[in-house]
Image 1 (tube, rainbow, N blue to C red):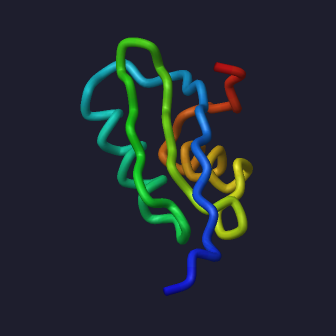
Image 2: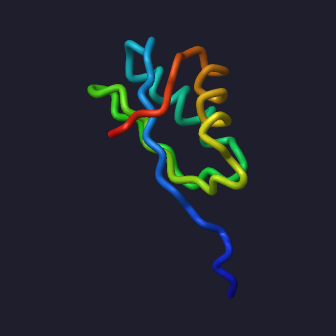
Length: 78
């Protein structure tokens, strides 16, 4: 079994979502990306945690997917 895929955790801050159904839209959109293993949106803190393979899904791809869902996001330092 090869373990060549490296999974990394990226935390983004999202803006513009105001209801729990917005969370599902973001999780669905980001979850569709190739290389994304899991997406967890923290509604109260507007944090989006994504476990992904950066070779397949870059941070820019994640931000673009959130934008496609209708929200603004940027990489967070924490």
